[in-house]
Length: 438
Image (tube, rainbow, N blue to C red; front, side):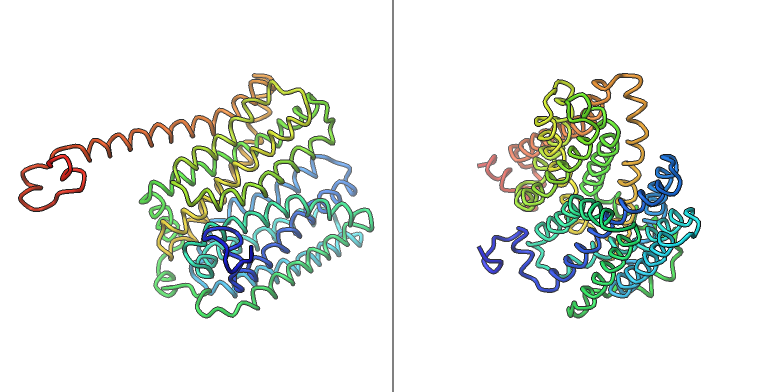
């Protein structure tokens, strides 16, 4: 099937727009480079220091700026021309990667590595909110689920391919080679964004009026926009729960790999399975979003939670890998639903700020999950910790299912209720009440 006659809402249909293909290409090379450079960064710090603590500090240095500065990245995406913002993000990161390559190739203090990594993450804060706001302007509204699924797919592919490519580059040379390669990906990303010739899609509407308000006031506006749409809040909450599960998996799957006979290297296989499941889940998500969204969200949360509830009884490595893949598919479905929901439910001038609030909170959920997991494992054992991990999304799915049933019961009750005298006099009679009256 060609992209010209693809069904609406699928990845294929989203790819028929040249401008979106260029945006996606830039995102793809940038994402692959980020995962590639992460491997080289940790390897460089560990080689120089021989300390696992330093390696952990370096990883934290990459994550913390996104959690802290993410909301302000959303503000920037809402206030300034997004093409300029995205190109500036890429060029700043290009320069920082070259500086990191210099640290790796010379005797400069290794403490500079986590500092540069933190600056690179800070420079990236406005990028993803800018992509989230721009994507709906590049495709038809009906193809928005496919566009978001395509974006999630390139992230999943980068999660699998980036570390593999980073490992190859480390075998062929020093970490400096990987840093230079990542710098090249940012140059390619900037070129892709500059190649988009769609007029007005990068413009930030009412930017001048927004600049008059304070930063905290604008953040409050974004939070208020989320609160005003309960469905958006539910989606954001589901996405945060999935991030919490992922953070717990970063600890618990080490123990699962040992229990199932996969060995320590099997930990990497389990996360590769999550990534592969996520890539497969993007195609499923683009199709599922054409169905009623609450049942789909319940099913997606079930895919995240139920495999974790089954894992305590699993002793076969192959089955553990399959269950890990299911959690990845469910999590990516929730992510695509959340992004599509925010883009559809919120006013256009609030999407960047709302996205800038939701994504850092979700990333923070990964950190919280990674801290909770060892506490649960030591107090409840691996079985208890896995059950707690799976219980969170499963409970959320049950609550949504109960609310859906209650909502349907109320709707049925309203449809069967006889019309009041006021409704008959004013003509405010719904099809349901009219049918009851007849």
